[in-house]
Image (tube, rainbow, N blue to C red; front, side):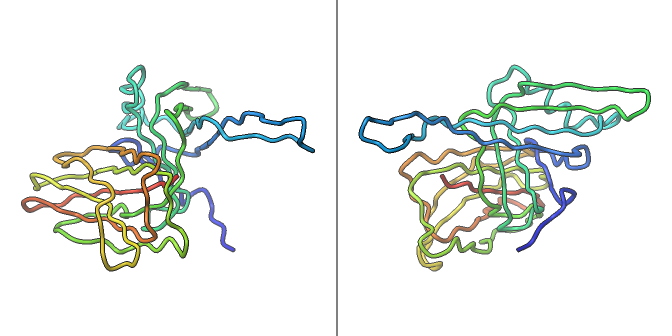
Length: 240
């Protein structure tokens, strides 16, 4: 058993790495349940219903760069324009990831003469707060390549679909970068699972995998760049 302090958490909002202006975060996944108890039951019975959730960030107000706060401001009133991913144990491959595509439902700034100016932002999830793992660490790539494979374990294949996210925080020199997530049953023969939109600048994207989509035991990220340069990005996958 291993535990970690909150100070190893890292946070990405759209195309920005914003950990330096976040002091804490809270992710909440909820799912409605409907009672289906009948007269023949000896206890209450329920079936799962619609998913929802929210993600909150809090911390000191950045008075210089305003990177995080500009992302929040620009997303207010714009449907599905805030893609937030948090990583409780850092951004290495295979680490736990929590991601939400949503809309800011609350943004408050608090000031006191005895304390630093602070903020709280809550984003209401569209559909769900999804929980998965990092497929490509937040690192720079300068050439085409296949990433290390992740073994989800025996019997880990799922058929519930899921979501995949990509945050590109730096992009220079290249004219494009097509990133894919591939999956495999045997870690030898690979098939495309997700293909992200060709990246030509810093950006962020969420891809939805429909219910019924199978995600096999092994997964990896594949980088296909055009030209010469460097790009830094993170990819996460959350099976359902």
